[in-house]
Image 1 (cartoon, one colour):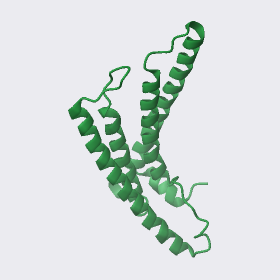
Image 2: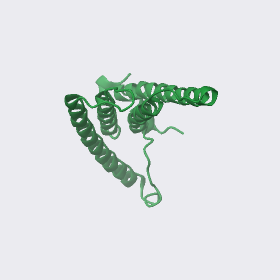
Image 3: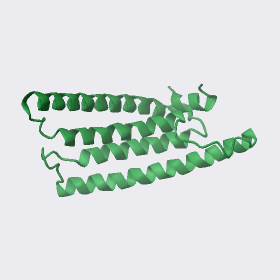
Image 4: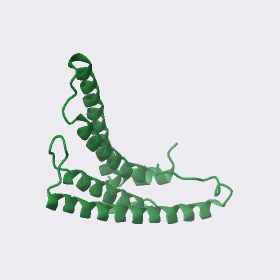
Length: 167
């Protein structure tokens, strides 16, 4: 059941971008699953796996996970424990939710900054995967963008979206 707060967060521009980001992450994860099936089938047929399949699947899984954070923040679907606050008045529960969303936004922005630094270092050092020799900085950059979007979505949720962020 969608509450007014969930509808408000999903209707803003960051929520809309997060939805498309999550769909793209789902497509990447589906491709990883198909790659795994193809690799297992090839191993069964001729005894050889697809070269670098484990690297591609791990990178795709990271991208899919990063893409889900922003969508969860925009929809208010983050893990919340209400066992200890269910008895509190609604206004106090709302205030606590706002505090936790602001804290979550801060954590997301911190993680985005750290992933940006990581992406920069991976790019500067030319870090590549072992089997395929594929550059890895771009996965950290996608993670940085995803966490920045999640932080923005979490920041906008308690206050509603500003007029320029509506659909």
